[in-house]
Amino acid sequence: MASSNNFLTNSDKVNMKKWRVFLIPYFARSHLIPMTDFAGLLSAKHPDIELTMVVTPGNTKFITTSLDKYNDSAKHPMQILTYPFPSIGLKPDVETVGIGNSAESSAIDEASHMARPGLEQLLQQHKPDAVIADVLFPWITVIAADLKIPCILFSVFSNFSMLVLDCFQKMRVCPDLLDHVTVLGLPGPEIRMPVLELPSFALKENCVFSIENIHKSGLDAFGIVVNTCRGVELEYCDEFEKTQARRAYLVGPVTVSYPMYQHSIIERGGEGEGEGETSCLRWLDTKNERSVVLVSFGSLCVFKSAQLHELAMGLEGSRQNFLWVVRDVDQWDEWIPEGWEERIADRGFIVRGWAPQLAILAHAAIGAFVTQCGWNSIQEATAAGVPMLTWPLAYEQFINEKLLVDVIGCAARLWEGGKRSTIETENELVPRSVIAHALSRFMEPEGEFSSVHRKAQELGPVARSAMADGGSSMSDLSRLISDLITAMENKTCQ
Ligand code: UDP
Image: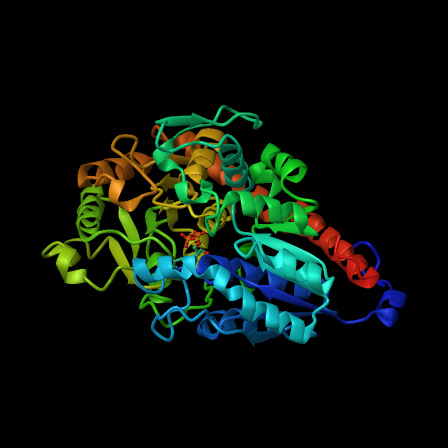
């Protein structure tokens, strides 16, 4: 039996048994990526735990590249097992939110609970010693309890957003009756938000991703792993541990563990889909330190053509260097301004499709990041010490923005005016003049946002040191391994 920390004694090694743990990510890239990185961490820290990633066939290609990088040095290479994607009438390879159009993505989210029978059958057949599953599969706790194996949930959301949503859910906020709501009972400054900025679907009862169900499964599960770091989320971590989980393990930012993170070129799953895989990094090499704005909106959200047109004009008007990742390339000719590419050629770089975002953010030329406030992107920027200009669009992104701008102070809102909402059709168009002005003010050396830049730079070493030996995230990882092995050995799931 392994000792209670990460160092194995000789007798541990002799007596050690191989444990089989299955990891089950949700079908979205922003969930597949951190779970793969977490698996890599686990495998490196305790090589005698045998790990298997369980995915639908359409998601194997995406994670294979990342797993291969970890497996190069692994004692037990991580395996992949597949279960059938729910049959909902989508095209054969559309099994990932954000890959097809918005309607297809919504259909995948809506069908997520239909994955249950396939997963249940697979787990019954293979009988692993434990499962680690995405929080968006809250019913996995019931399957694990039937199998009498410990179930760990894996959260890619900030503790802050989960606490805020849990408060709103308990307050039974009725979105139709109120303009603003104030969170009661959280540490830190008062949190007050427009109702339109809340993910209303999550607050409804009986919805696929109901916060009530996620909260309940968090307390039923053996524990929760959260991709976050104590030094960044501070008192919200203590509050999360007290109220949201039987045991919480805060192990992030997991991307910092990605092989070769310290080097300038980082490739990961999705290679070959974007045209800027490494050429954008070579272009960054030609730019001065902290002189380029990265503009990227994650793996899920898309813009209307009119907004893409305004954004293009705003970037041009800002007179800043920029690297723009454009996922919505299908109707390119519909919205790209005439002569625009020639006019911005010396200071703008477009990546069409998928970019190596982790490597871009870690590049010295990046001075700011216009982001939709997905938690993975935030952590990647935080670890790299890059300040953010926030442009949230959906889900819990407005809540993350609140944390960054009003609590931590490492970001500024791109637009304070106008109607903003998690519902796409309610959003007002962000005008080109606002975008141009926001970027040029934000990039001004020693300008009005210098304290935001300083805060972001201070947080970089805080986030990275959490993942170093002796750091808080590594200690939580060791505690997780020790608790899990004890539970597997005693065959308890509580
Ligand atoms: N990402 C990437 N290349 C892209 C777009 C996104 O590598 O072109 C990665 C990004 O680094 C992050 C994830 O995809 O790890 C996006 O996660 P996030 O939580 O920021 O946003 P979401 O996709 O859920 O909106």
